[in-house]
Length: 161
Figure 1 (cartoon, helix red, strand yellow):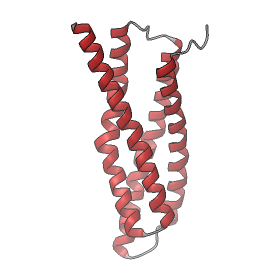
Figure 2 (cartoon, rainbow, N blue to C red):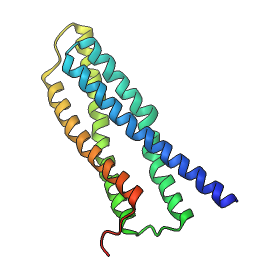
Figure 3 (cartoon, helix red, strand yellow):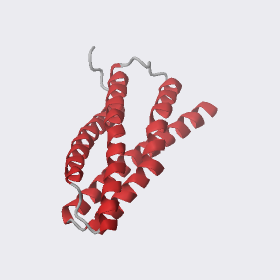
């Protein structure tokens, strides 16, 4: 009974944290995209501030919880950590995190630029547009990697056999 409870608890934690990770990313991207497109500086600064907060509150913990709970789940269930689907998932997850880390820095920079422009009553610096472009590219790449990880987690295909 304890093994089933442990498995169920780990599975719930893993699924819940992946939901927070995915949902925060998609939600933040959606609202930031809308704010940037509308061009209202107050709204842009407000949205950027909350995107940064959301990353600290939700994304950062789940980026840590996901691999820890995933490895624990694999051990409880008996999946070898060198299974094709699991190795590819881990590589894709590492890629996603490698995309996310510079995104965090960019978000903080965009928040500072938009707040400064709002406080001064000036237009956004040209640097802001470049940051948005790079943020979007890295976000799309991370999104694609995340979708692939979801696929691998659900279907667990044999890739190289």
